Image (cartoon, rainbow, N blue to C red; front, side):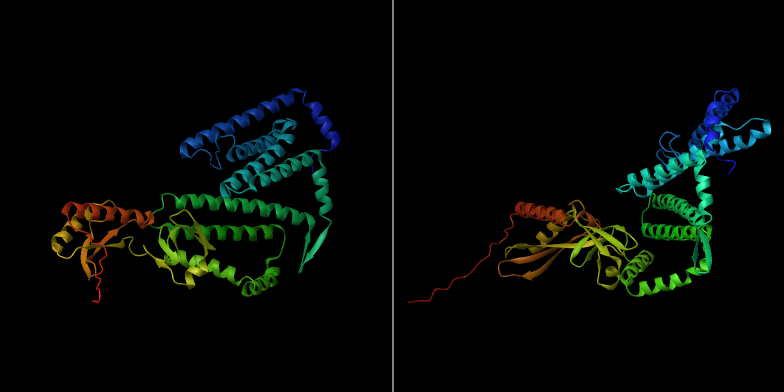
Length: 422
């Protein structure tokens, strides 16, 4: 049996040895390791000015990932040093598996909460990891886990030309989970760094985040397969089958993913643009690798597949310039001083909030209508994402007040009735 584990008789002897003075010395050394870990992590948090609640430091230093990792390293070093000093290892045989389980629980919980803050599966995954970690540490302390792993070593499976033991598969699976958790953590950290204070280059940062996450997860998967002892050349058949599946059943899904990267790379659509797609108009709130979220001014959100944005016509009100031209029409009675009215309307429309001074508003005599002279008021705004109905209403109210002040009549519809004699 592995020397680093304990049998049942050894466990009883260990419990009885806690009353000896050497155990008290180990407890003192353990408290010193914990105190040193807390001091180093708290000082490091102040130096790097890391925000509270992060994965490494947590809310109160001790609830982050860095504290149990540093405590585990110090405890492991103290355990290696004690035999050189003539001390028998007792307490550290228990505390090292406990700290290892604590590191696994803290890392998985913090990363899952950072990557999936709103997911309902986070608590379930946290409980599952906690049970596995604490159960594994208890089995390791009692010596049951090493015996089970030795039995698993004798069970082999044939994958292609490779022979893989059940123990290697379990260890590879655990390694895969650990590597994928680290990849998700690194990708979330990179995403937070890249998207911080994002302005005009948000789309480029978004594609960098998506590519980074895909590369990290791919490398983590390859590393995990290698750790499990699986020959990567045996995956050639699987890759061919996957290619056939993409060509038939997953064609639309692959097209949406590729279209998402094309949109982000070309920057034809950017987060914050006002667009109209399939008679749905709104502001782009997010661009994912598979779909794009468009939020209308009334609060409704549309999830549009990226392929649709590539293959169909999309109206973008703010692609090259966020300024949008708006018009409104008013009629005045025949016989009015048209030039004076037009100058007055330009002046009053220019004073309306949200109406741009450059380009300047203008008024055009657009039609000799049946009931009066038709004037078209043209003006520009630079914030179409705030809606167009409000600013058009403000312009119409300003025009109505000014025409009332000038005594200019807005004609009612007129009809001439001819009556036949006799």
